Each structure stands twice: as C-alpha cells, then as structure tokens.
Length: 520
Image 1: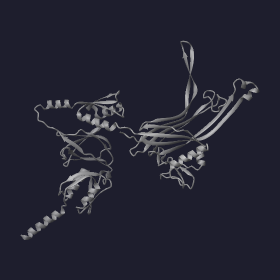
Image 2 (image 1 turned 135 degrees about the vertical axis):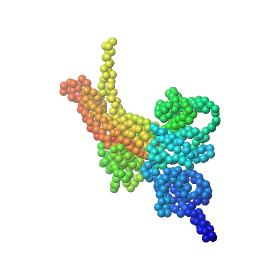
Image 3 (image 1 turned 180 degrees about the vertical axis):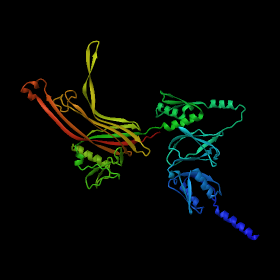
Image 4 (image 1 turned 90 degrees about the horizontal axis):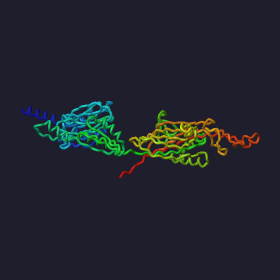
C-alpha cells in the first residue's frame, strides 16, 4: 500500500514538472513578438524564436497568473496567424509573409468592459463582402487577403460599431475592433419602435472642404456608400451635404477628414545655361553612369554625374548631377556653382534665365522664356462695307519647361519633365543694323525645336543637371537701303550680306525643394 501511494505521488510530481506555468500575471503592451518569445523561453525548457518576418510584430495581450506556457503560445499562434514547428529543443514560429501570403488579424473587444467577444460577425467590403466570425478569445483571422483599401464593419444584435477604412499592406496586418453594447429594450410594438428609431437616426451634415474640390469628394462618396447615403454638393461654398443614418454619416465624415488634407508644396528652381559647344568635355567633365551609385574613377579634373542617385525612365538607375573635384572638394553643389560662375566670367557660359515656381504636390507648372514672331496673316473680310482686315498670326519659340512634382512618403520627389528648346531660323533682314532681325514667312525662315521628356527621382533639396541639347544658329541675312540699293552700280554700296553661325550646348539645372509650412 505504501509503495502504491509513493508511486502515485511521484506520478503527480512528474506531471506537474512536465507542465510549465508562468508564475505571475503577464501584461503585454505593444511589445515586439521576438521580445515576448525571449521572455517566455526563460520559463520553458524550449528555446522559442520567430522568423525575421514576425520579429517586429507588436503584440498586446494579458494572461492571468498560472497560465501554462503552452496555452500562452497557442493563443499567440491563433491570434496572430502564426505557424509553429518544433525541432528538438527549439520551437519556431513563422508568419504568413514567410509563405508569400498577406493576412489581417485582430480581436473584437467591448470598449467599456475590455472583454474579448466571441461570435461577432465581421464584414470587409471591397467590391464584394467578405464575412468572418470572431473566435473564443475574440480573435479573427482573414487569410490570403488582397492588398488595398477596405471598409470594415460588424453585424451584431447586441453590439454596435460605426465602421472604418483600413489599408491592407504586405505581410501580417493587425486591426482590433472596439465595439459598444447596444441598449436593448423590450417593446410590444418592435416594428414601430424600429421605424421611429430609424427616423431619429437620419441626420444632415454640411461639411466644408479646405483642400479638395467638392466634385472629387462627391464622386468618391457615391462610389463608396452607394444608396446608403444621399450626397449633394454646394459649389459656391465648396462643401458636401450628407443625409442618412448616423453611422454612415459618421463614417463618411471620417473618410472626408482623411482625404481632405493640405497638400504639400514644392519649389522648383531652374537655371537655363548656354555653354560653348563641347566646352564641358574640353575642360574634363565626365558624365558618370554606373549601378553602384558612385562616380566614375578618374585621376584628375572635374567629373559630373548625378547628385544622389536618380532613376530615369528608360535608362534605369543613373546619377544626375553630382560633381566631385578630385582631392579638393567634397560638396558637389558648391563645385557646380563655382565652376559655372568661373565660366560665366570668361564669357564661355551664359545664364539665360533663373525662373522659380511653387507647385502643389501632383499639380503641373510651366516655365517659359520665349519670343514671339509674326508667322503670317489671317484675312478677315466684312461683307457689309467690303473692308478687308489682316490679323497677324504669332508663333513662339524659346525654352518651355513643364514640370510635374510628386512627393513620396520618404520625402523623395519624382519630377516629370517636358522640355522644349526651339529657335527661329531667319533669312530676310528687316533692320539693316541688326543681324538678329528677320521674318518668318514666305520670304524665308523656319522654326527648329528640340524636345526632351523624362522622369527623375531625387531627394529633397537635391539638384539635377540636364544636358545634351545642341543649339545651332545659322542665319544668312541680306540687308539693303530701300530704293537706293536698287540703283545700278551705286546701289551695291548700300547692300550688305551678313551670316551668323553659332553652335552651343543647352543645359538646364533643376532644384526641387519641399516647402515646410508652419501651421498655427
């Protein structure tokens, strides 16, 4: 008998040792999962680790004193959609991203009691409805979800949630739903009470827009809420009027608040430079293009490449306009300014314009430095009095630069650039003392233009240099004094022929800078 009791006590002791318990309350608040595993491993005979995809996933949960380590791990596994595997004395957890899938996880919680709720129906809307139910611990898991924007809501007789918009990104996404309990009253006439409640719930809201246009917001709301809301606009006040149930109006207001944000502004400064043909190459400038984001190896002289690695469509990763004066300078922009100033003093370089423009993010702007020439006449006849009028037709040529800035999340700036550089090729002189004077009509002349379209990416306050636009001016002008020049023999003294041949390289130096606004 004593032997049996002794064996029973040994068996109970072995069972107690086999089950590992956490000795106190475990309250986890926004803690990385890797830290939680490392802490639990101190109370377990197993080494507990997570792969790189879930190591930075923050968790938020509470466990009572005496909860077994196995139960804690099982709840974490279910709540956050993890996969567990065991190898000897090591437990390994992997996330869904490791399997090249995306997912949404979270809990349904009573906002007043902090209780985790089971059996709550969760609805995700994006085209079609996706429906899920919360589990025993209030957890829900949406597997293989497509990345993008969703409207999330719940359907429950006992709990209320107004809904919200969420953005699903790559990997494991966490979103907890906090619901409030409905006030349930017994009523003899339930249908009548429901009808009266619906009447009370219909409200009207007038929302003034500060940044976006009313038509744009109106279109988004109609596509999102369909027949659930009546939406109209007040163009004069740039406002939106909403009519419908409280929960839908509230959701629409939240959406408008997120969309109607002040746009950032970008200052784009341009310096338009004419340089003698091949002057930069003669002075030892080198355009450097490589994939290591550094300049080409040179022994001396000045090299020109990209300031801080730019991406140009069609060319891949290149360098834009960084300069490096070997052995003497480190700042590319300082060397560029110094070099251009030196060339300007020798009259080898000419700065034609220094325009600057401030643009809203996503809005295009135009920089123009042009001249207008009459290219013809438009005949206008008046049938009543037989008077014929001639209206001149103008055409412009010069430098036209169209820029569209797009600010990214990391404050880098994409610039869509559309550049035209054009000149008039004149033949007949109008002013004998001015070789640049001429006509653009049937007596001779043409317009020569060069166009460049590209997209570049640069960091805030960086500079790029666009080159490679050749400019050739070839003019042959005949000048004469009217009437006298037509007299035989003597008239030759009052005639002259002027020719002008000039080849230059055109460069555009662009700087983009995000304007930081101090809002009060």
